[in-house]
Image 1 (cartoon, rainbow over the protein chains, first blue to last red):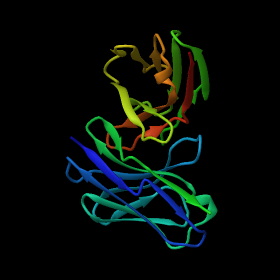
Image 2 (spheres, chains in turn blue, yellow):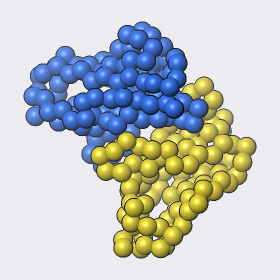
Image 3 (cartoon, rainbow over the protein chains, first blue to last red):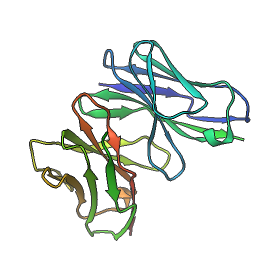
Image 4 (cartoon, one colour):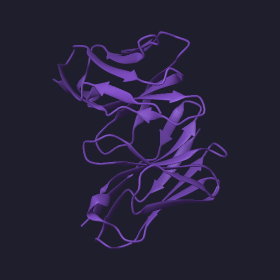
Length: 110
Length: 111
């Protein structure tokens, strides 16, 4: 079955520090992959999506970036975190029945 | 692009009552409509979906209806239970495109 592995589950980082969140996907090849952010009590904001290795599209301007070095690996990064980067980050893949999500990373920037 | 509106943003019902959440979409070419349930601090989970070639789909206490002419679809939960309390998201997708999510509905089922 299709599975997204995402880590870490929680992360507390100081303002100005770098960020690297990683997810890997199993059970499907060449999937479309997505990074979403969810502020507390809010909806799902699409940040990046990738249709293949090295192919990244950004949905919103921000200080985050994404990379896809391997077919089943999707990485979200930042060189310098802002307070506004706090939120719940979800990696997702597109399967036969819509999106399937990773377990999420709760990022708190202090 | 696609735009999905979801109502209400919050919904409180008594245990045993029914709950209905409604969504409208803008792209008449959208043909896939999933519903996700997200419990606090957890990932969204697909609970039911419907494709544009059917008007209704049911899975135990959950049903989804689709009106292609009016471009709206609804989630119906009958005999609600406290464990149904969560945030529910509707979404719409056109073939080959991404999912577009509604803003979510926080459902609270009071015991």
